[in-house]
Length: 441
View: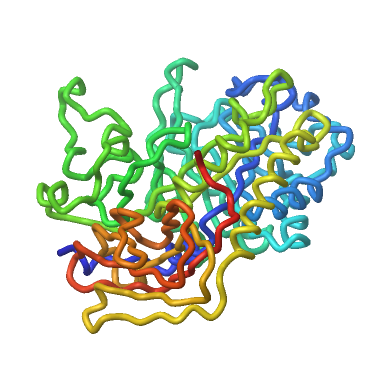
């Protein structure tokens, strides 16, 4: 019944966070590109008014719990004064070569109560040793600098993008096992996402999610983001599975689907999306609408997934005021939902746990926030919500975070009936929310 599959302690940490930020910032910010070629002059990086406090204040106001900074993107330019390459901030005019953006962001995160994480691109279009075994040593040195000099790091984000053939270089064989082992040795509580064992990519960058998002899935080959069962190497490379093919399947965790596999793992999904069209800042682009972003929020945080929202600073080192306003709007709605949680709800559970009754002072309500105790795995497969014997909601999974939104109804009681479950259910938290929060149309 797959109930022996549970999260590790790092996964429990990120499930509690649920919602955090990406910051794409670097040489591409100054060249108006998404992917740099690694040949850019270091002198291009020269923000005149960089203010990482502004970034963190806006992100905290949006209700997010942490920030992941692109310390090095595919162009190889490092936002800290690394000892591994000259292609870094130490050779830029920013603060006369004495700047360290990684340190500035880490300090600002601490000031605003945010956790700090790092993105370190395995693909490096500048490093001469890329495509050779020596590159793995080079990468580990960079990773070690980041994980030993900047305090507690909550996440390492590993991007799988690689276009080495475009540069006339061989494809690098990354030593991912060494990367993961090094990260945990240096930061025991670090969560690893992307081509990594703790958190998986949702399968797109547009914010689309599955109706039923399962944490218990077939065992993955992390670096390929494909199931292990589909990753056997074949000498005929035409037969080799395409990378990221399995991660996009519409069903990854139903009982019927899992019956075709022998090995399983706990692997929660992360919805990564940018507030704008691009990941880096481009003057011609505008932020997505509030409705668009709130829909992604409820389809991810409200549907057993994590949300990673990217906000890119501009050439001056500042977030665009339009983006800040959008973050403020999101934060206000998220806080309003928190403020509308009803106090003094009486909860009665049937002996088997399949029926849960909530009673409270009569008023208009329009949602319930529910979570399972995932230390007992993810179990609920189908549930209904009733009020006075009237069914007002039908749902599938719950997992570590479910926000069940229904039409506003004036009542003093609600009942959750669990119809399908992998053995008995373990519901950890139930919150009834009064009407007045954001409603996705």
